[in-house]
Amino acid sequence: MTINLHPEPSSLSQAFADLVLSRNWKSFALVYEENEELIKLKDLLRVNSVKLLIRQLPPSVDSYRKMFKDIKKSGEINVVLSVALNRVNDILLAAQEVGLMTDYNNYMIANLDVHHLDLSNFTATNISGMTMHTHSLKKSLTIEEALLSDAVALFARAVDDLERTQTVTGPSLTCESRAPWAYGSILMNIMKVINVRGLTGPLKFDDFGRRSDFVLDIIELKKTGFRKTGTWDIRSRVNITRNFTESEADVKEALRNKTLRVTVPTNVEPYVMLKNQNESGEAIEFEGYCVDLIDEIAGILGFKYELYPAPNNAYGSFKNGEWDGMIRELLDHKADMAIADLTITASRQEVVDFTLPFMNLGISILFKKPGESPPDLFSFLKPFSVEVWLYVMTAFLGVSLLLYVISRLTPYEWVSGHPCDDEPDELENQFSLGNCLWFTVGSVMQQGSDLAPRYVLLLLK
Image (cartoon, rainbow, N blue to C red; front, side):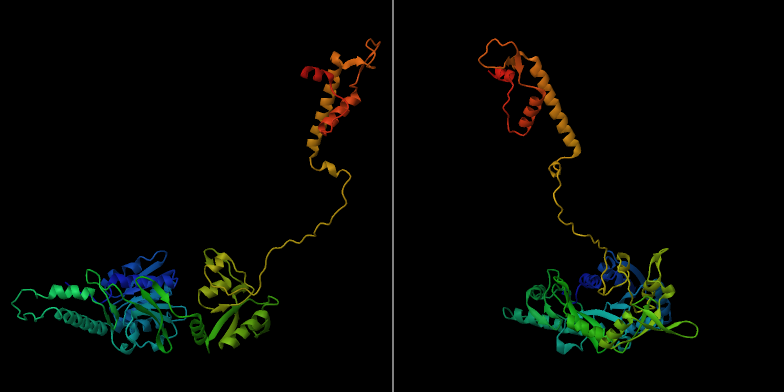
């Protein structure tokens, strides 16, 4: 017999899990205060393919730094805070003191009233959260106050609808009476089906009285305070409303008047070459194509930069389970950027981001197009290989010799040399060795000849 206007913990858990997935976090640390928070964020704890580090908030503020030192030692840069709102500033201050509030760190605060906090001292890092989509004129209200106002409006609307059909009398207020209010169940059913729009959006409920339709605003901390960058609802999930122009403007604003550390190789003509060095032999000035390129980019975006040589002049390779060179500098956040003739490989792309390449290389083979040559005298032999031609010649000679032998043995091939002479002194045989060869050639070429075996004709008759 309850109506709950606050979003269900399971829905909120799903919302924060969807937000983590939309940010493409491969891992994060969850800092919680009470054990009940883990139950409320159960979907966040079950995000697939994301490593999770869980830490409970220590009771003492002095212990916050030790907790964040452990998180920093683990190499984690993404943190989800599920704590009371009045502890957030102290927690972020402790993280800042141990060096976990940089451009590379991301904080998500799992509290719907996060937009009421003054976090102007932490704009150097990426802080985001979610809040209920409330009326623009009521932003000063907390979520609890807005929900309380919506609850009163919902109940008043239900009583008003009920009074149109019957008279509603107030219930007994004596502590001894245990009789239920006669209109209680009717008002419950009315509140579940009526259409009311409150400060926190449409007030719709399922059969169990749980809020079934609500919208959360995704907010991010900027220099001017929290700004809405997207929405979440149970049907379409995360929907980023910030366009490319707004994102580009935010990046330019974040880079303006900032000094970036850029690591480069040395003496790689014509990309980066040593121009000057100090008395101890350390490089202090560079020149080359890459230097000119970063100088132009800095002029357009309004940031400053300082170049320093890569350790051991190495680009970055994976050896003994870890990276070295410029890739190592980027992973350790000692360098904000590396600019060089650095080859993009699959293993490097897994750990760092690359810009579009300014040069594409590949393996090519050059060969001369063959010209037309005059036909060979024996080009007619090309359809068959030498072995096939040998087999053909062997068969040709074999058939011719067999025909010659048979024509000598059969009496039908010995005839008179003159057709009018019935009793000649000598008989002739037309199948000489030359005629046998000629007869076989004519048969193979399917052209025929003047010769035909008589004994074959006789057999056919």
